Amino acid sequence: MSKRKTVLADDEQTTVVAEREARPPVEAIRAAAFAQFAERGYPVVTVRDIMKACGLTQGALYNHFKSKDELLHDIIASTQGELERLCQQAVAGAGGDPRAELAAFVRVYVMRHCRLRIEALVANREIGWLDAARVADIRRSRRAIRDIVVTILRHGVERGVFDPPRVEGKHDLKAIAMALLDQCTHVSMWYGPGGDLTEEQMAKLYTDMALRVVGATPQA
Amino acid sequence: MSKRKTVLADDEQTTVVAEREARPPVEAIRAAAFAQFAERGYPVVTVRDIMKACGLTQGALYNHFKSKDELLHDIIASTQGELERLCQQAVAGAGGDPRAELAAFVRVYVMRHCRLRIEALVANREIGWLDAARVADIRRSRRAIRDIVVTILRHGVERGVFDPPRVEGKHDLKAIAMALLDQCTHVSMWYGPGGDLTEEQMAKLYTDMALRVVGATPQA
DNA sequence: AAGCCTCCTGAACGACCGTTCATATTGGCC
DNA sequence: GGCCAATATGAACGGTCGTTCAGGAGGCTT
Image 1 (cartoon, rainbow over the protein chains, first blue to last red):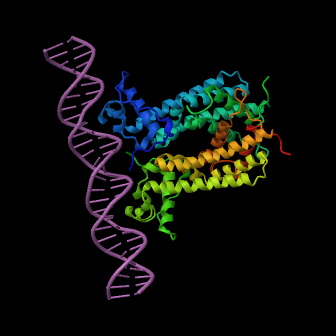
Image 2 (cartoon, rainbow over the protein chains, first blue to last red):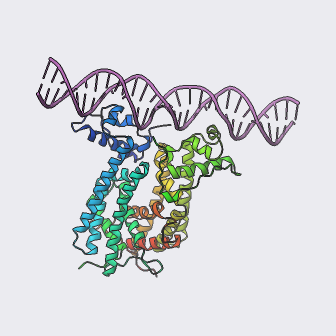
Image 3 (tube, chains in turn blue, green, red, purple):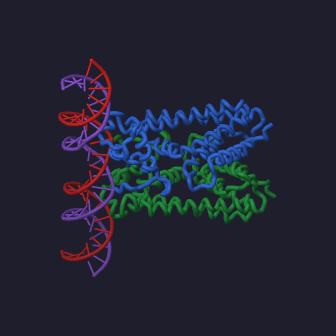
């Protein structure tokens, strides 16, 4: 079995430096593991790979983590938790107008997925390797974020400032929320140094598109 | 290392039957491999797993495929090729109006990603395990599909029937095409038996959203 | 019946896996 | 200096991996 496969496009490898860091080893391990998972995917990255990348040997991992599994969960959970917090905060600071709330949400969400695109990519792609208990934790957080969007949409419809597309005369706000989130999440799959737009411009573009999708009336 | 992890949600396992099929062994192997890759992911599915699932032993694989790698490529390439063909055909049959073309494209694309969601999911998720030459082949096909969308958008703008959002006064049709495709592609990640909408309704909803995003004027 | 071709078996190969553990090394504190 | 706790080492363990290959089974042609 060849080991040299890559999961990112050729021009976007993260750099794996084999240097001994000044920071505490736990963080060096986290960082090295993250970089390797991003490049090659959890199941084919070995404990030996990770530890070599931060200048240690296999055994030392188990002074800091119970298992390779816990290490992955540690990485994903911190990314996901931070994302959920940012989203709540963005909506809370928007002053109650659904149009402003949606705009703030999309802006924060897209900017984060551009800036920390590798983190987002790992969190989305490697989640399946976690054991059942840990994966449930992450999925709860994702549902929470989706429900933030659904709530914004419902308020907007109730107040008459949104008019999203209907199927059979009725709204399916959950499906629309998923569509918006899918769109925004997956900028992390292709946004990068090669592109033409800055993070700000991406956020603006995606906000415009989202407001169009939900049929927002111009803001007062 | 535990092997029992799953990559799909709990209620959507594909069934792995351990029966000897009447069809030729090549196809039985393809089908078994596909089912296992979908459930558990390429790197953790072993050649022994695949062959046991169709009532054979490990060694027999190599009478039909050069390697496990070739087997995966075989599966992904056929899905991807078919998708590209369907997209071209849908656009060609739309009569030249960009609004009809976009609607036909989204409709076909979404319906296929709902109906053959597992196939799409495997093609999207496992592509990274292919070696460089094979992955390039698949990526070419994806770019071709993206370019179909870009072309539709450009025609629509030129004829004045589309008015997509601008950044700094200019269109970035590639980014918009990617956003639309991401949205449509990833219905395969969550659409399923649990949902409220039929494939037809999903296609309609996504078509509406796409036309809104590009700012389509009502059709004559 | 004999030869041949196709396909399958299952042992074997060499490599690598996650994890453990006895042993060594380190750096702070008395 | 001596001591202790924290941390690193690297051999070793029991497995599993993809792949190879000598041999066998079954059917077709001659």
